[in-house]
Amino acid sequence: IFFRFTSRQSMWDVPYKVQLTSIWFGVALAVMVTGSFVITMWLFRGATQASRDEPKTIRRRFASTILVSAVSMWAVVFVQPNDTVSRLQHATEVATPLRRLGLVFAPYMLDVAYTMCLNSCLFLGPLVLLCCEGWARRQRDVGRAGAATRDADNVDNQAACVSQSGSLLTTKGQAAENDGRQLLKLLRTYVVGPVTEEVVYRSAACYFLYFSGMSHTGTFLTSSGLFSLAHAHHLFELMYQEGIPLQQALFPVMFQMTFTFIFGMYGCYIYMGTGSLLCAVLLHTYCNWLGPPDFSFLGEPHAALVGTAYIVGLAAFWCIFFRFDLGLWSGSIFYLQ
Image (cartoon, rainbow, N blue to C red; front, side, top):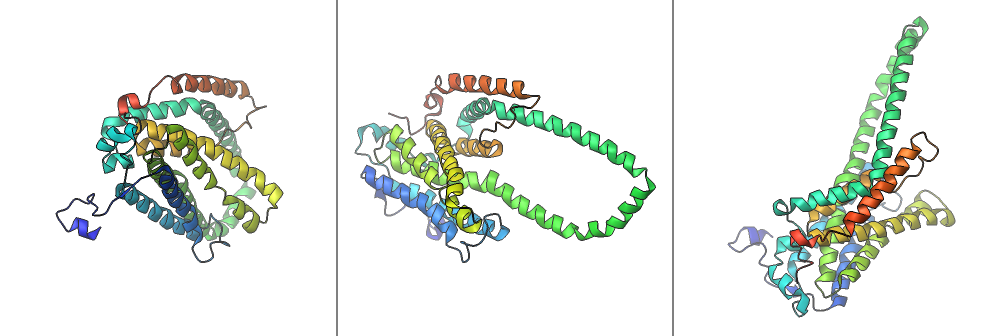
């Protein structure tokens, strides 16, 4: 890398390049980069005993996942497409390193708008539920504030507040520590996690699989399966770190793997259809924000409104999803003939 930046050669001009000569070679590369993403998170000293939410563990995993993502991006530049497959010949000619990595922005903002609109339809129910819960929480807070104001007029309560001021000061350090821990969790969920996972499981894996000669469907299934398997290590965390028996830990992990497989299919469709890593990252962050479907609203006063939003949103998603050709305006390298 230092040589590239200190010479007149382009940083993309790698002296020795490898070609995706077969589908099995593409699968092997995809397994290598995706497996390294998970394995490196457990190579630190004491990683098997440390909780995933400990600040030190989070920082170490930031370092390992960012390193694997950087290596994966360089591998995409280093490994050339299989130009012996006839349907890939035109795509190979225009597949510049930046387009292979999905680093396309300005000309494809329509794809970003489409992605966010499509995802908002899919998650219309959770969005309405979030608004309803926020309104109900606001009403409860207003009621509590009024009660606190009335209690403050009581002399005994004022004395109690003064006596508690010392203990409140001692908790400021703990509050600052908790804020730092919470910030790391937010970065993991909404920034580092989506970016690194999309680089490895979409940008790199989809490139290795499809440009080795695999079909669109095969690429969807294989990369989504690898993305799902990457979450199997949570079974180890539940069993050996939290002491949960296998029978009880198996169900939530299997549910998470199933959900991530379905999301992986959805993410692959968006990434390969738009050819934009930005769309995939925004989609991932959006889904992390809302999480899996929550049906706890059943029995609540707003159940009818949220249920209607679920139905309308899914119907709109169905209509948009199957009636738009993503590659129509984006010119994605995965759909060039």
